[in-house]
Image (tube, rainbow, N blue to C red):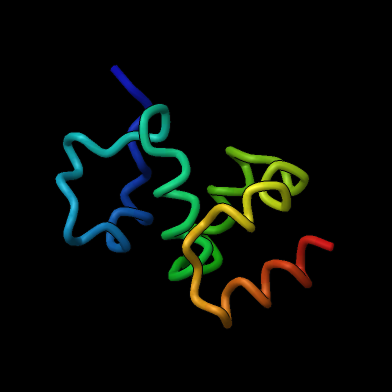
Length: 77
């Protein structure tokens, strides 16, 4: 079984089929969604999956709102 998302993160993927969404196959999409919309628990889970350095390297490739992108660029400096 592939790594499914914790229940407390699933509310951010309301338009997705959660039976198909998993970390192994959808890492970039999950990362961008949680960085853009996630609360402290969801982002905490994400940061246990990916190092800060990896997140910093991915920021330019994610489709984040301008506000979120600015925040994460400063936070991950």
